[in-house]
Length: 311
Image 1 (cartoon, rainbow, N blue to C red):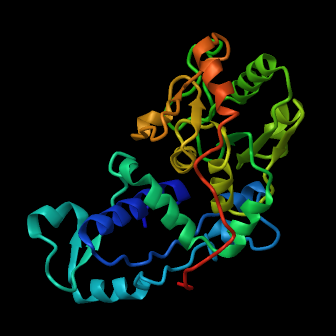
Image 2 (image 1 turned 60 degrees about the horizontal axis):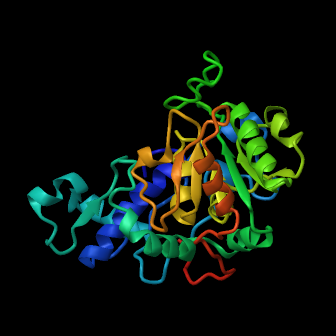
């Protein structure tokens, strides 16, 4: 699977699943592991199973009806492989052929109509331990995803005229000021949960606001599913991780001006709002939509169960 981040890899997984839904083809369970060392350098590894964050080891299982990954490897060794792009030209009816989904499209356009099935299938391959961890957390009211890592520092010129660009960090000021606007209108300290690869120093301006907690270091899948349960998502517009949290939860999702999650091809399936918000020029319609979202649970419900097999 291409791409080191979980969000990028889920697009390939999702497109392959949709093809199987439509064609009746058998799904070959992928190998999710990846060697990434950013969490080691940032000191954000979980204490219990660090390989779950560095390499996605032990996060997923194989559904009973899926073929094991080595069946795909065997087909590749015999040469009976058709790429997804070649499928319309060469056809895919030859028995024993393997259709390879290895393009990095990063678009929800082919996935939107199948969001219920994809969500259920993702939960079905999530190991029990991760589901139980997510289930143990109180339901998040506001979820925030702050991406630092290898994203470029946010623009500083213009006093908010341009909040964020492509593959740029969303300024933490946007999260702070947006939360302040919401709390001022709601007249209460709405609780917030944060998923981030940043450290305590970087997140300090948010933590100082009170009733804000950071998810403990576990793994990317736990963070993704936790964000998917929130009622209002304040995300990083350039991040496919934020986009997948919005896709799974189908909740109101808001990002800073310059990059909407809708740019990833997300289409609301529950008539929810997916838009940008400028807290320095607050739009009353947007504020009302965000506050109304706090009374509406996300569509992502979890049960601490598992029906798959080990990969």
